[in-house]
Image 1 (spheres, rainbow, N blue to C red):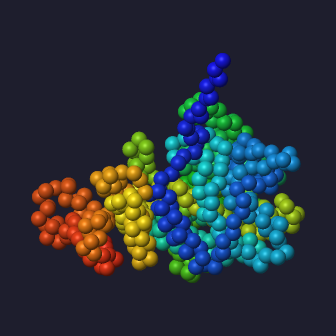
Image 2: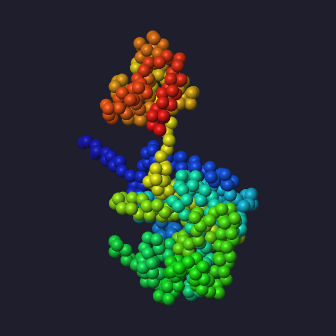
Image 3: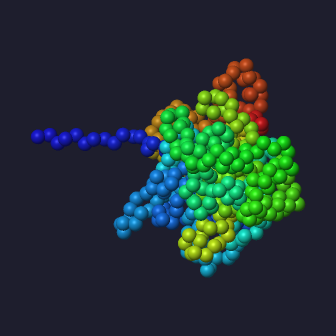
Length: 496
């Protein structure tokens, strides 16, 4: 009796996840290094926390769901404790601060970058795993801590190559919105209704006033037919809130008067106005005017843990979407003040403020402006003329690496023609050949693959190219490093 065939697993990706190649990874590493340099220049230091946290430590703060197990990936450990993959880097920071509060220097200033995971419906450009880069100041209630993050976020955008006018950092204060809610008859203690309102108005850029109005009322049916239950506010309540997030005032002065009317006699609203004034005063003194940081009541941030200043970095230039339509890219970073998050663990309020950059989203936008390409060091491939004497090729490679060059010896089984094809497909700049004849003469042959590719494009340019650079030449073995560096320098000039 024959044994049953063993089924083979399918080579498939889990839905909402993706593999990434060298080009994207290297571009991301370049971008992360730029962000890290700005953060460190402001005095922030790195921290790492694990991918998993106990589920109750993460809390119920996801923007689009009411319960963590609807929006996170969870499992039970061997102690039957529920653990979840982190959905942001802020909740793990709050846990770290609570666990180490007595030993941390306060204000505690840290940055962290890493993957976060959300168990949400994937879509075009929307993945279940993505990278964030955060910076937070914990232990300071001063508005200057918020202002500093706004300045740092602006500096980061410009360090990445964006010009003023390509981005804007928008600033608001949750206390203003709380004042409007209070004046509208929505109790601040009613966290469920308040959360529904916040998530609704956070979608105003995507759904417009009409869509948000429906979500503030009975609810809204989307294009797929799915119905989202609304906050159940009356038309008057919804109108008052929409007048705050989508004002119809003609100028800034009228806008401020309108906010004062909407906030009414709310003490929390007045506190929000005072904090905004302090932040704007410091920003102005340091040269961060409305061309970089702009007050905008439409910015509310969907997460429920924000308690004061909230802000978003938005890109203003159009990009092409998957349907080749021009759209405004929108938000690539955001953050704000969250003075109550650590108190979940300790019962003691610890003021905190932070910013988070959506790395993958920002990198996509930078790519559309030609700003995200990673500059790889040129690759040199040393061919193996005699498989029985591969050590000679590896000795050449070691010499090149010792000189600071990026080099590899061919480790496949192909013949010489296959090795040149391999080097070409790897994007190598130069191939090195040292056969028996070359070795006897004390020489090596260098093939300029970059030039060879260029020559193949058009025979009309051959004379011009050959006049400046040779596609292949033999050089003294003792001059290997010098000749390769000269060839790479010539290549760089030709590409300039």
